[in-house]
Image 1 (cartoon, one colour):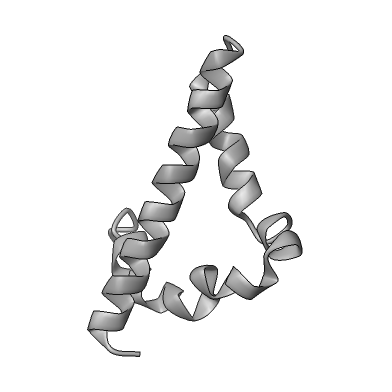
Image 2: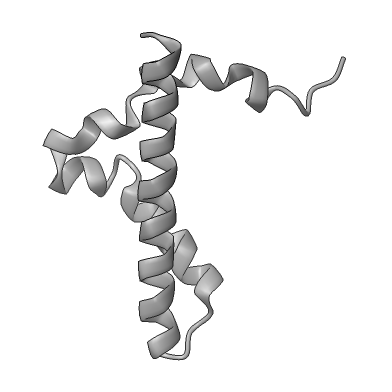
Length: 80
């Protein structure tokens, strides 16, 4: 996978995640519930247990093959 494809996939993942969090947060605020809890629920729904069950055709968005591109960012806190 090229760098451009990885960047496009990462952008798609961020957009999907942010839109889902905002939508579920908005719904929660209508019921006078904390948006933070709703955003955690959105993260759970986007995970493989729910998203993969109900939308398996769209599972390419969250492929594990994209994770190596994030290794430098994920290991930034491990300064050794």
